Length: 163
Image (cartoon, rainbow, N blue to C red):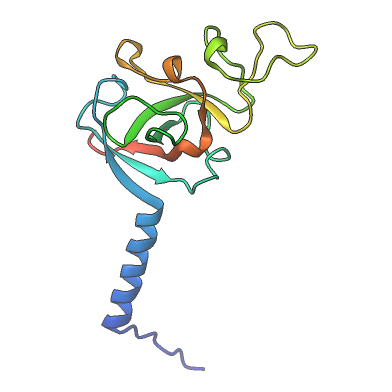
């Protein structure tokens, strides 16, 4: 049996390349950092590669320690973050099921402690997470906002592009 060479026309190659680019754009994006809240990990002007998350699927894909991109919402749309750009970058300090760190209980908006739990052992409820900036003196985050709904997470930072 003689092997048949696979011939791909230039038009087909262009269509395949365009499809690959479209798929990558749905999966990945580049976000520029503004502000000082994530210093020293990220500085103003840094560009980061972000893996997009589909709405409603963030919880299964965000882990404690991940740097996440959060969408702001306007008045009347639930929790409103302070002004600025439409995206915020913070670190997921606690995700669903993790203990809520001391000092956050008042802002946690979490259900009361379960019977048998030690005092101060409140946990992040399902569908919520606690986010912090790496530079506490220059960050507005869950210390002011309380726990955020996972639905606000639009992506997870994979890496800084300008090292």
